[in-house]
Image 1 (tube, rainbow over the protein chains, first blue to last red):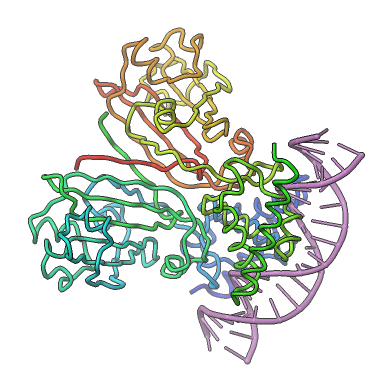
Image 2 (cartoon, rainbow over the protein chains, first blue to last red):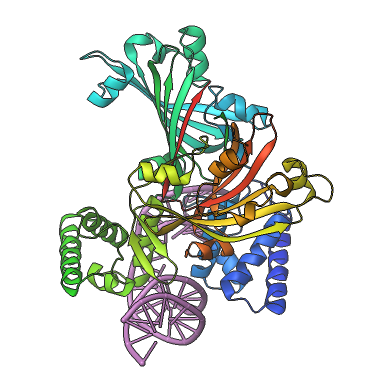
Length: 259
Length: 259
DNA sequence: CAGTGGTCTAGACCACAAC
DNA sequence: TTGTGGTCTAGACCACTGG
């Protein structure tokens, strides 16, 4: 919780920065406003995950219209400096987490190893009738079923990742009765003796659709990273099929591979 | 070059689609306009890399203000459906190219293998004094120099990638005198007997800075993918250090890795 | 319930691209 | 030179968040 004093301090610094750039540059309003806001944000006055002043307050102190304020904020959002929670405001981004898609070592481990606090929340889990393509890929016999698990994952209590996991239900009996708010790859490897030995993945940036955006408290149409991942066991059978949606400012993808 | 007839056909279809969604849904203006534009774009009336009607024309035919038109276009841009050339207009995106960062097999090969036409253009090449960090990484002795090569790469004559390559100048004598509008990894492997056997990379989405945006004919602040890549030879020495900026709608990143 | 972000309008001017 | 996209303003209303 920010005190009123800190708020006033922040606003004063913004006003000062705006004035400085107005005096020393010939840049257009948007560029000056962005420089001022950016300077104050990197000065450390705003804590990570802390909310910025309201758009209307920024409009006043930066001396530009609200539309321009929103363009400035969108620009900083694209850079990853700030992020937005839908109808809640704009917040200062924490540092990115390095995420190695290839390693079966999962989210919980990565995040903890980098000194941050991971959390996984199961949104829903159910037995579903897979589409023919999915059934074929997961090695599900005709008429067989799949488990679908949707989870939301947090870093320092900030939601950053939505994933849907599909597995062959026959191969992992009782899976849905387990605690899934943890590492699934560990469960499959330890409890079912099915370790993942190979991963194929594809990723590209795209807009988050409405349902995913909602689950991340983001604005529909915000940029996001979409990841499709297929995990194989030692025999080359598909263990797990994942569809993931990442918050674009939360991660840095890491790769380390022999040729 | 599009004929006037095709233009009129396109506008007629847009008007029809806009009317359809206005009649059949209760959605707000932006959603209806996006649905209409999206429907027409996926109908195939517009060719890949072809320019959409001007924002003011869309404003008229979609029945919303220009600001809303631009929000719709920005939304479709975030999805990767269309892309923008700065001050030139909005264009229909071609399909993404699968790009495997890990494989030393380069851009020219990947693109050609997928039935598209790659091109590489060297923007500049020079001998530079490397920073201490870069020198250390590239194994450059005290006072030694590095080669910097900046290239722009095209798919079907659309610029999609800007890269800066840094190598140890002492290790690759005469490199800058060669034709660099081709595969650099092949040159290093074949002509200098230094094949890359390991690649470490990191990637994250961020806004393109002004210089890179300009080289891609994009609007400064547009989203892009930043990639830092380090290539090693069999002895574990760094061969090549790359900084790359990708067009976010042009690629799909592919990963295939043993655990 | 007050204030916020999200949306939308109707203008305007400029620098630049393309013809 | 014409028209374009890029920028900017000054409003307005709505749905929702949070106290």
